[in-house]
Image (cartoon, rainbow, N blue to C red; front, side, top):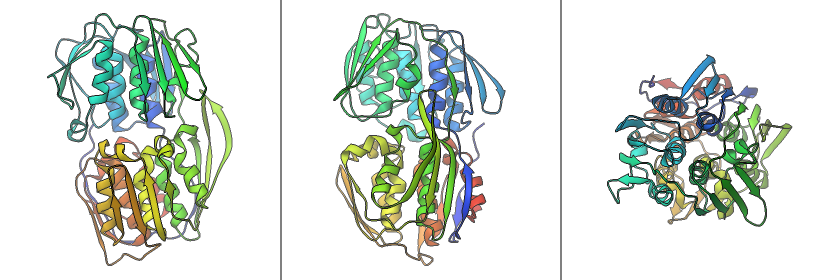
Length: 447
């Protein structure tokens, strides 16, 4: 059920804390578990699933397409795989992806090469504004059709191809587009070759690694992914770790809170997702990964964080793919670190749930921090840790969970009087966010 809309008010600085927490499960892995399980053979299982709005949207879409999904207990599911080409839909069925760009791109990848699919696709107000031009171009190469022509945002009509043929694709920074191409290729005739020009998240490849008959990966200067179409997939058995992107907000709070420390247990530490942590370590942040182990081809472990005096941040274009979700909270850290921080290669942030560059500039400006942005770069002139109890921070309804979460952290650290509209958007990725913050000592009011 949709969460009722609410706003949040804050006007207290958080006190020092020394705690140990577990966070919400990884959203990317949760969504992929259901999607890949649905096109695999036999019964797949997923444990410790994130039961957030985006994942519920995934389950609802798959059920509409005829997939049987059984919830055994909270966070534990069985997915009764139908194999390739067996998802079906009545003509003009409406699929609503909610706020999830991951679900939209990956499921469209699957459906584009599934026969006899003619559906209407849409999302919520925020997702409907996001451009799907690159996705449409890739799926059109496989043979899918999107109507009206030359319209690149939802709502749209999608007609799948009856004769999908493998393509050659050069992948950029978007792991979602790369994953969509892989999933479309699995049900296409012949081979698809994907050259990864920029290293990006590899959860989809990791989940498919046991299917050597269907996918082969060659690592070199550029990664080559070769997909052999029409090969049955083995069922998956996933035990999903904590979300490393959600962990970033608690990490930032700890680093900038005096005399504080935090242990975040059982977090997914895939190297394609830890750019935020590696970057901050270079700036003298006290962060350690411990208890490392590999499960389901994914690295996981604990994160130990202590209060730190951080240097101004220098983020290059190469870091973007492994840090994409964490830039809003990085901008907060930069604003509260004395000196000039520079972020390069971040132009794609303009096409997230909101324009995250522009919106975060508005947030930090409200506490008196200046910034300068170009299309692909941002400079933040950090003032260091300040008392902003005389300042007001307001975030309107943007439909962007990362913006309100970042503004929440800013208010806790500076004492700014904050009003954050539509905070329920946080439930798309981190339904336990407020509960954990309360445990750490945060004070806030819901309206």
